[in-house]
Image (tube, rainbow, N blue to C red):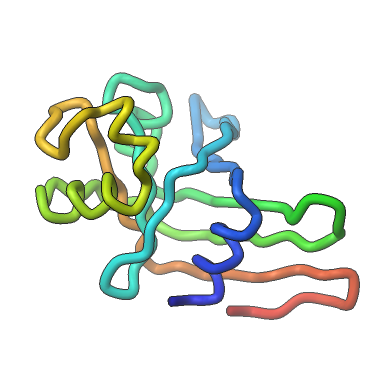
Length: 130
């Protein structure tokens, strides 16, 4: 398990930044998994975030640890994954998604792998590339 994934799970809610009409668009996420050494997030294909990730694949994820000055920033490229096995794994790893999508073959479920990741963890003592 990567340090970036460990921190995202520990911090809970994280924020995904995309680009909308040349401007940043940020929203909270909670569903994340690491599979075969890569980070994945999930959304619904009718949401604006989905359209933004399809139009401009550059993405940034940020998370903070409650009550501290610790935070994390991940920069990468979002690649949509249609593999049913990956979607099934996402539902297993994030059971709250089952309440929304019911099954991995739900055509609304969209899963993105974050490729070319660059991750930096920040603390009061400085920063560390992960």
